[in-house]
Image 1: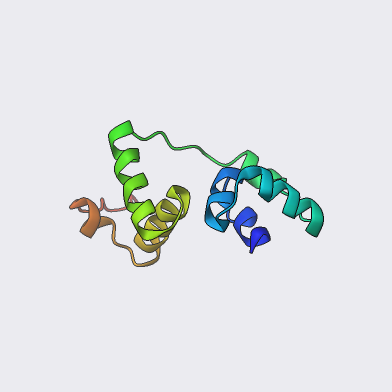
Image 2 (image 1 turned 120 degrees about the horizontal axis):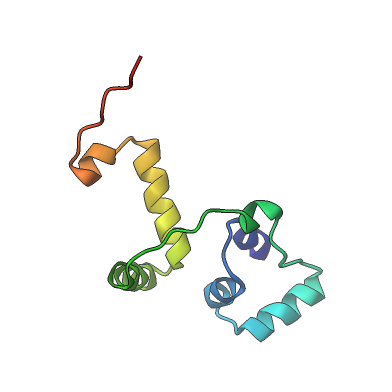
Length: 100
C-alpha cells in the first residue's frame, strides 16, 4: 500500500496520515520493509498548481470528510473531468472551435 501511495505522488505526511501513523513511524516501517520513499523524477518536475487559500481550505475539508488526501481528491476530480469530458458541465463554458 505504501508503494502505491508513493507512486500516486502523496507526500510522506499524507501517506503517514492515510496509514494512521506518525511520519516517524512511516520512516521506521519503510526501513524495516525496505521501501523507498524517494519519488521518481517525474514527480520532481510535475507542475504545481496555485490555489487561493479559501479554495484549498474547502478542498481540504472535503478530503478530510471523504478520508482521502487533498492531492488524491483533486486528482480524482480532474481525472473524471478529463475522462468524461465534463469541462462544459463543470465550467458552464462552450469550447471554441479548433482552427483548421
